[in-house]
Length: 475
Image (cartoon, rainbow, N blue to C red; front, side):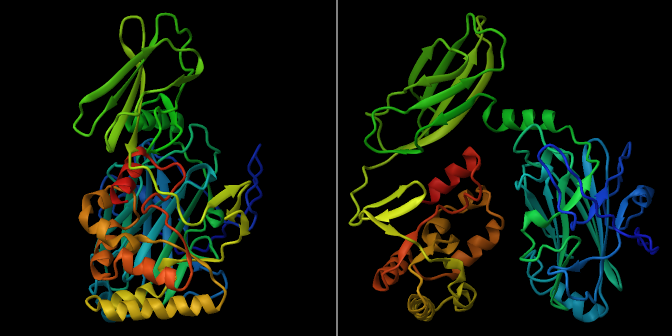
């Protein structure tokens, strides 16, 4: 039974203005009904009567908004106090051909047909992505909280139900606008159609083009508080570096402001080594807002350390706490070329430099990994591509996951814990990629390319301490 009504309905597009938000009037809008309790059986059959009350989207558009969609998708969305529920019905015309595509690479969510749900609370640009294929394989980029999914493949369609706990959605701040950016997308490999509720024009990840969703009743302030406490404590820490070489101290800033009085309070900071042994400890009297502490690290050996800070009251009870990691490394050698950034401008040996850059992923990566066991063929393809780019004026490349293939293969668990969108696929690609880091650097030198070697898996400016650690383990 299909939960989406066949009655025609128009999507209301409205101009919504708040203190700091003006929604694009061209974007579709929808309001999510609130249930006392959402669907209890998440199996892809839409048997629960609650789906009849869902806000409904009856047709998807092409990603560019201009092309006709031959095999349509319908969607429903509703909520209760704890969860958001999404149901999708994905139609197809040729059961045999379509389902054969499903089974080609069932463990790769994005290899065949798949649906994707993007959720951006308050339209901050900090969104999560959930992707599911007809085999039930799920890719979820969010917090460590269980989402429930159910998939059913029928003669002319497949159906997907998703239960998304609000606590599984990372919130970047405790106060967000009432309008969320949400989009529902489908990749149909059989018809080569890319469709979505709100056309994103340049790819599904364009969060500025997600649809406007009103009426979400998540207790954001409380969830945000719990998430911050679980991740890193609620004491705000900031260090001047993540990697230290010849520095004698860590410049640690501790912000305190959530208590009424600091009489009798103390701040205790400890440095732990990788085995959990306390290396040093310091206790000071705090002041409101910004406290500067300088833990001594000059004599530390190379390695990873964890800095934990606790704010305690006069009875010794910990009121707030926080932690961060840092690394002690060998002092870096001075590079041949002095690269500086001043006022957001790059200078090389004192001269202005404008990078005309391309991501390494675009250097025929798909073609290269087809030759999984042929290192020479892979090198030949890469060199040909670099030569062509040099002739067309490029001077810089940005590293990608495969750039760190040796590190990935030695640290598979770090990859799985890193926040990468598709860690299993990254590991598989690294194993197929036979070109080493030194091979790539040699080719870049040959054609006089500069390299922006961004650490893998640190996808966001506000990445968590765990993601920093995973990236550092790989580098």
